[in-house]
Image (cartoon, rainbow, N blue to C red; front, side, top):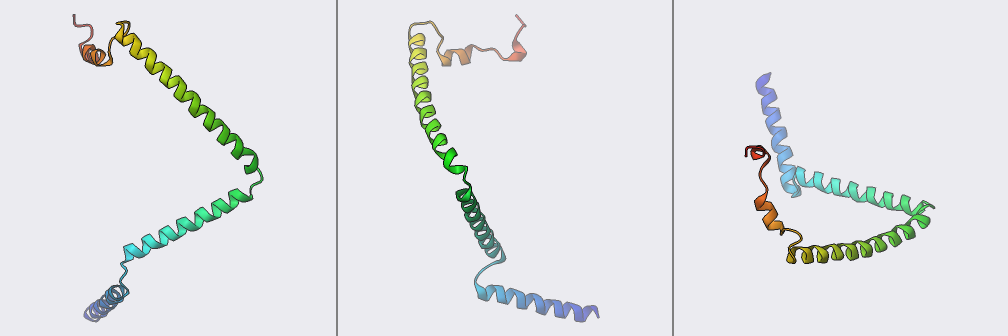
Length: 113
């Protein structure tokens, strides 16, 4: 009985392998294709759901407006801080960052002096 089962299992395995080989697509490739298809379908449903939401027409303009002003403010503030820091380093008010890194003692060596 075991011998017959082994022979039938071998035939089934060879038949399955042959069909996969003839189709030209492995199981991994098929699963990947199905996964991408499902992801695209879910994205389309989500996009459709968001477009049907009446709250979006009120939220989107405000989001876009706050992003643009925040970016401009951040760039202006960032540039000012960089210029002030460089000026302070050049005039000796602040140590240069490289000097600060080399002068710091590790926590395990503090308090030994």
